[in-house]
Every structure is written in C-alpha cells, then in structure tokens.
Length: 200
Ligand SMILES: [Fe+2]
Ligand SMILES: [Fe+2]
Image (tube, rainbow, N blue to C red; front, side, top):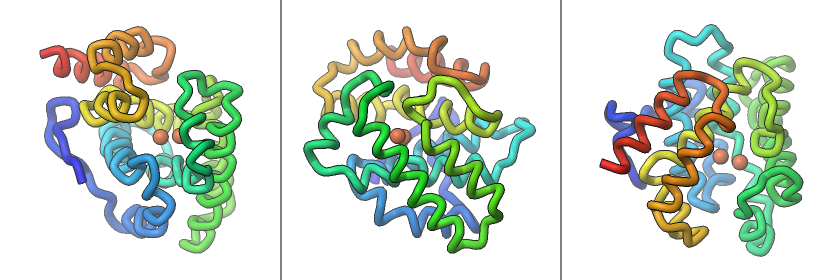
C-alpha cells in the first residue's frame, strides 16, 4: 500500500478504535478502483480538516471511510463509465453513491451507531459526488477530504493510470477546481499547498 506525505506534514493517520472497526468491515467493499488507498488518504486529510472544527467527528470519519464502498457494486463496464469527469448526471457515479449509502447504513447499524448518525452518514454518502451543495458542516468536510485526495501525488498518479491524464494537465485542471470544489478555507489552503509541492 502506498504511503506519502500529505500537505508537507507526514504520513497517513490510520483509523483507530471504532473507526478501525468500520474500516475493517468496509475493506471488502474497497478492494476495487484502488479505493482502499483512496479511503485511507481521504481519512488522513479529514483528520487534518477536523482540527479545530466544531462538527460531529464520528459522522465525518464514518462517512469518509464508507463513502466509496458502493463502487464494489458496479460492473467493470460501469466502473469505466464512472470515470467520466462530470459527476452530475453520471448514472454510474450516482449508483456508487446509492449503493454506498446502503452498505454504510448496514455496517453502522451492525456496529451500534444511533439512528440519527446512520441517517446523517447515509445522506452525506448519497450525493457525495453528484450533489454540488452541502447539507451540513460534516458534509463539507467529507466532500473536501474526498476531493483533496485528487491533489495528492497518489491522486494525480491515479488520473494518469486510470484516465490517461498527464500529471501537468491534471495539475492545471485541479488548479481551476480549488474555488468551485472546496467548501472550507483550510481545504483550499491544503489544495494550493499540494499543487505547489507537486510543481516543485
Ligand atoms: Fe465517490
Ligand atoms: Fe472518493
């Protein structure tokens, strides 16, 4: 598994306690599209975004770990279609959100999460790509952590290998996404820092 520096400040934060339990149960659903690596990097980025934020940390971290479990339910053909850049209206992206929300609710129920927490996590997951607005502060951090992954060297390399996008083209494209994509100022700063680092 790849590890890397994130935002110039060391390595991955691995899930602990109940979040480790969630990750263990999510893992079988994350063994596609390199989602195990994506999830751990997004988790580490969420941990950083949570510093000083007044939000429900359990909801954020559970949603981050479970958000892409739904990709496990896509066929190979659907998976390649889901790589298309525009998430809105992309039926396969929407399918991974719906399936992910279902899998997340099942796992969190099994682990004894409360009804309200489960509902909130499911709502965040069901729309994490296709819904351009946020439903809560927790949703904003999940969306920002997910998108920030793309700015890491692993995310840029994923686009090279899976979508054939050259790193220089990818970085240029990502620069233009900082304002439209991110909700929190912290995420915007981290995205800009990752671009600076990649451009050396
Ligand atoms: Fe996703
Ligand atoms: Fe994701």
